[in-house]
Amino acid sequence: MKTMCLAVVLGSLAFSPALLAQQIDSGQEPVSVPVKANQLRIELPDSYYKMWPEDYRDLVGYYTLSNGQTLSIVGRGMNMFAYVDQDRPHKIVSTSRGTFVALDKQLKVELDLKAEGGPKGWVTMVVPPQNLADGRIVPEQVLTIAMR
Image (cartoon, rainbow, N blue to C red; front, side):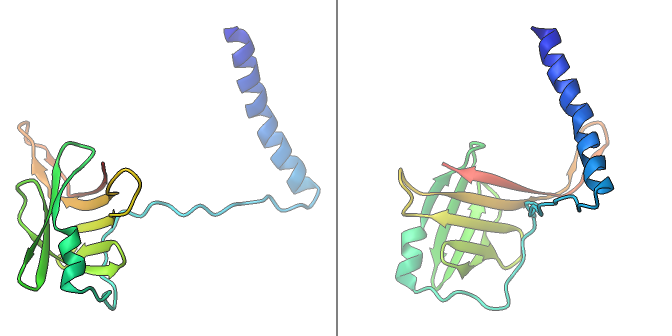
């Protein structure tokens, strides 16, 4: 069985370059399909999406992230803040319906409150550089975490 699987894999690998060479020899252009990479960066838009205080009130709460951390969205006066666990609060603005970005570009929240089964979404956040015990430094990273 292992030999059969190996033969199929090797045959498909050998066939692919031959097919590409045949397309090039016959004058056909190879077909390419552009795939948008998941760009992990947090950018502020030129203009913000207008939300009313009652819209923000629906967002206020605590959301469990897939890695066990908690996203908190709180309101203070006319401003909204979001933070993960014990991190410092980041002032957020709405960039589109359900998408919020911190003005310091350290946090982005995409939230669908009306999703089936409860709120769902993603948090993209900047993890600051860290000093490890062995003296190495882990550089700043941007990561995306799903919300449950």
